[in-house]
Image (tube, rainbow, N blue to C red; front, side, top):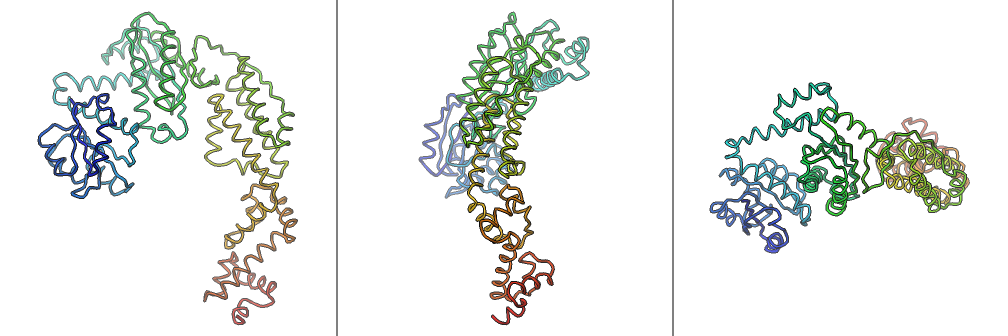
Length: 529
């Protein structure tokens, strides 16, 4: 039996937590409430409390003081703090007092539910601690780790499990509940978190929720779940042990159910890749084939793929109509371009000739086409397409059709938007002028300025002179002299210091340029003013 204590000086917060949380579904029996530390202490003295959900800032004593008292009294309580302030000192103190979690208001009930689930699991583990020794709990816990290690070694193909004899020896030595005649089925699950979902914000919490949903979905009297392992980010392998005769259709149905729950509750898309069933000695080769299929096929999200239906055939790549795509770019028609590329992708999927190598060649053609188009507009694409967003979309583009479509949309729309910007010379020149005025102390060259607007340096220089009637170099000198004049008039800084502030480390060269522009030296200018 798990009990919870809610503590907050705000009556409405306590009421909201008491009424809106589905405590029964969280396996919590009793909910106690308090509005200050004194009331909370009285409840803790009279009742067994396993989980504390508590505000930090309260008029009659802070939640941190309450937790310090709980630790002194040696009550076994999992504490979850609520606060309006993302204060590092609060978080640090909460960690020192071994709090379970630290949660910023306003309350997101879905996320809080997951945190409480973890706290309940921890509380149950501690609640059973006393009797666990007699029941062989520690042995079971260690056995679970041993079992997980066994499967990880078998999946990765370590040398210790390289043949049937060594596998049989390991089973006997580690007292694992397997026989060499048992049949197992590996299932590889790809996860694609939605933008702004928990999978992107808090992966640990997301993984906890994911494993819970997987165990819930894959519960069946016809097989048992032996292990769930993440072999790389957002790629999980579940190992099922058949109790009845192997039947992959059962797993297809369960995978469809899991996909729906993942979409709804985990806010992610997913794909299930179902291997073929085999005995222990066959599992590593089967998983090797499964991973190979996963790398080579291109996935539609929220679908199930079967290894038994996968045929590893070499497919030739036939590019789309590149001349038409180039024409659509020239016509500044990104929507038609993307419609054409999406149609091409759908067609090769329909004809079952799309795999990772084909998609990679297609991506290469699209990148070269866009880069060539931008080069013709004097835009330096290799400078423009840098940064985390570009790198992430590029790397993910081979994961699925949807990921490729998302990358192409970014690639083409970015090119079009920047072309539209560069076709307004005044906007480009104004941005360069603004940068020169605000960074006159930096090193300013034709190349460095061209990088700011992703243009060819020679093209930028011609464009600037055409729009302003003055060369880029002359404008830089005039802007720097203007700032130098202002500093000479309004400060007591030395001429040498002012020269450095406007980008000239050589005092003599600065004086020479100043005299050319103003017909007097900086010192004479200051005296005259």
